[in-house]
Image 1: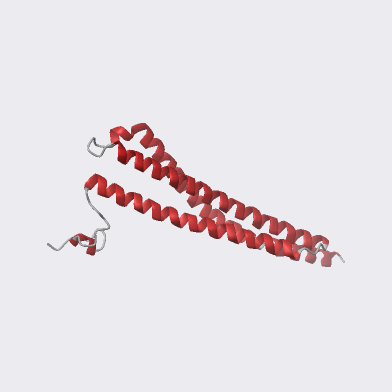
Image 2: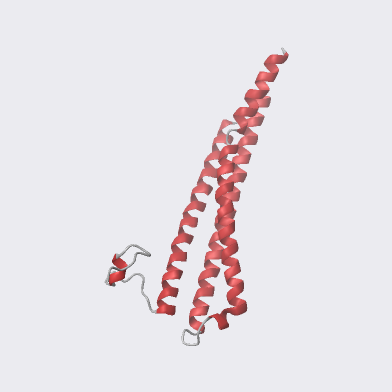
Length: 172
């Protein structure tokens, strides 16, 4: 009788732990998000401390203000993204608990486990979409910065260098 109980416990543990691999993947993405968030916060602090010294007088305070506001909005979006990914992990954990309880004690609540898992995927998806939006915003900030600081418009398709691959030497 003991081997049966042991094999049942092994089955219960393996069945209820399978979603943990999804948590591991989300944790890896979450690590990247928090690093990005930290960089944005560090840049805000640098600009608040040294911004007027970093910008030439001809650029003016307007550009500094625009960059600070842009970074602030990115930080808020990244914070929301991180929160959504943590909520996703919480729902995956809840689905694991429900699966474990169901398999261990014969409590039949499959709808709860499925609902928690679907909610976790929903929050994961929304967080990833917001994370992609942060990448778009960061490129928009760089384009604006290039235009203001060096009078280069990276979106200008008529410029001869814009047709070359990045960092490719001109043959002229």
